[in-house]
Length: 272
Length: 308
View 1 (tube, rainbow over the protein chains, first blue to last red):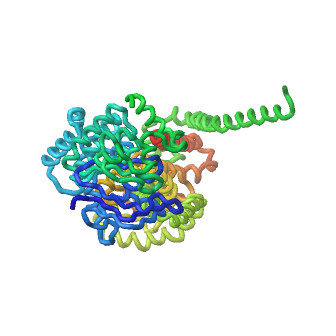
View 2: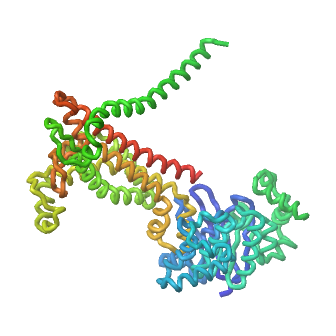
View 3: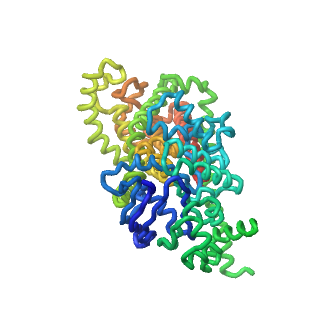
């Protein structure tokens, strides 16, 4: 079982709109896989298919197969709660739970295990350290989580996700709402974590994908254009579309997209 | 240049401004009027005696509001106690579980229920609730729980605190459910997803996350219900029994402040200070209701801002 996540002819539509079209990919274990592509091309949808959060939306039609650890997660008998426990989610914007910093991390622990108070405190400390947040919050663990800065909140979300002991970390543009400094901390953390976790990161920031990814899936309007190792995709892309997207020469409409312009600026700033 | 059109425009603007001011002034005017009128009795009697004395004999010059204040509090508390769980669960069901179609049916029904005239609830109370309490609940409770004074009474009819509380609960339920539903609905979807993504069940998510996030708004919904229950007059008056005594049990009859005013104002005005006493009751009622309402809207407004 080298590939913890595998999809086979996966298609998803929201009512009339088809978001994913015959997606067949494999996500390698203990690597960072970046799913790249312009906004609205189905990247986040793909991520939400993995932890079955997608079905919270109305009028969703999912066809094809998705295997996590060899099990088809859309089989009837699947326990969706233990499936989600396998995956820590790092959302686009941090949404701390409406409780204290301590309780945010303890939440998942409490739900899945019945732990004594002493053990709980130890674990919360451990996961806050794991997310490089401990030193900043150790004196105010019982302050409300909303009082943290956005960057700190995102690391709290990471700690919260790690606390359920997942095998996989899903990041849905996890740094897009953060300042460059906070973003860098998250990126470093992800690189560190890939020794032990399988990581899937959705991003429209190509520089970020180049920095992070071992494996890249390029999605364009619901279709997989290219999926291969980062080396191959970035250095010798097979498809013209991929070439153009990576160079930033993509279709005009993308340039008028706010986020795409941001990519351009970042790229210039770094002298590329 | 003043053409016919611009004149119309200016007139319309000023007319609307004037009307808006007039409505706002009305509240101040009512407050002032009530205060002015009730100042007569406030000069003659110490406030503590008015509020805490149980002796209500206007003809002897004794104006103790305690029976009415206590009656109002009893009825309101019973109503809130019954209506809060029901309206909260309804709100959660509508916002979190109900299919669009079911929501599309239930929400208009709640609207309708909120708009029904109180007197109809009063009639419903007399025809259904009072016999149910008098012939069903009361004998049952006295048989099994009679050792607790709370469930025992020498009142032999169903006209009681409990009947009034039930009728009031039915009346305030739709408003509370509607406001609570809106508040629960306004909790960001991502907050739910955060909890679900950690492997929490839907119920755990609602219990620990959604309700907590919506907490302030739910309290506002309860306060709105409270203020409505506190001021409700006719429906309560029809089923509460109107006995001037501080109630000690669910099955005791009682008398509420609004009922006191509605039943007596305009009659027996020859008794000195009577008129002033009733208007003091009105002032208390108005002050409490306005206080509750402002509190509730203040909370709701703050929530609205925090989500923008």
